[in-house]
Length: 226
Image 1: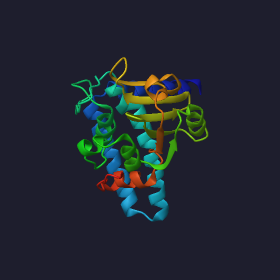
Image 2 (image 1 turned 120 degrees about the vertical axis):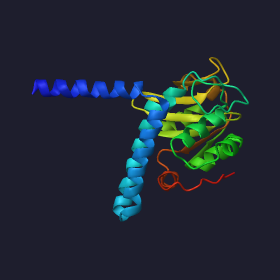
Image 3 (image 1 turned 90 degrees about the vertical axis):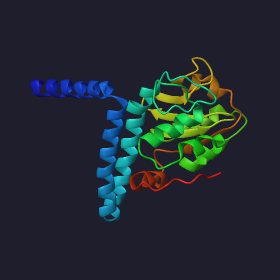
Image 4 (image 1 turned 45 degrees about the vertical axis):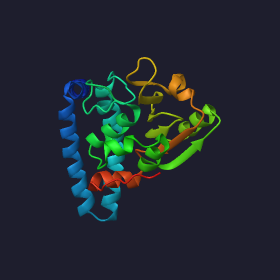
C-alpha cells in the first residue's frame, strides 16, 4: 500500500512539473483539444449531459488560467498602449491582458475592440452577477468574495481592469500593473495598491458564468456590452 501511495505522489509531482515545463503554445493546444471534447459532449448530449459539460468547463478553465496560462504572462511588461500577443515579449496593457489570454484559450472575441472599452464594459461583456461597490468599500468587496466559492472574477476599477481569483489560500489580484513592478503580476488582493486605490469596484462572475462558457464551447462570437 505504501508503495502504491508513493508512486501516486511521484506521478502527481511529475505531472505538475510537466505542465510547468510545457511551452505556452503546447498548453494552448492541449486546451483546444480538451475544449473540442467538451464541445462534442455538449452538442451531442441531452440537457443533463450539457449541464455536466458546462460544469466541467467551469472547473477546467479556472484551473488552466490560474495554474498554467496566467503564470506564463507574469513579468511581461506593462505599457498603456501595449498589445503584445506573446507572453514575455513586448508590452501589454491591462485590458489587453484580459482579452488576449481569453482569446488564446478559445473565446471568440475581438481582443482589440474589447480591450479598448471602458473597464466596466469589459466586465459586463464577459461576466454575470455583476456587483457595483462604491466609496472605496474594500471591506464589502472582500466580504462578498469570501461569501462565495472559489472562482475567477473580472473586476473593473476607476481606470484599470484585471482578474480576481478566490483560491484555497486567499484572494488574489492578477493584472498587468501600471505600478511597480510595471508588469503582469499576481498579488494578494488585500495588499494591491492598484486595487485598493480605486473608488469603484465593478465585480463580475467569470468562471461560473454559464452563458460565457457556452459561448466558449460553441465558439459563438462574443458581442460587446456597454
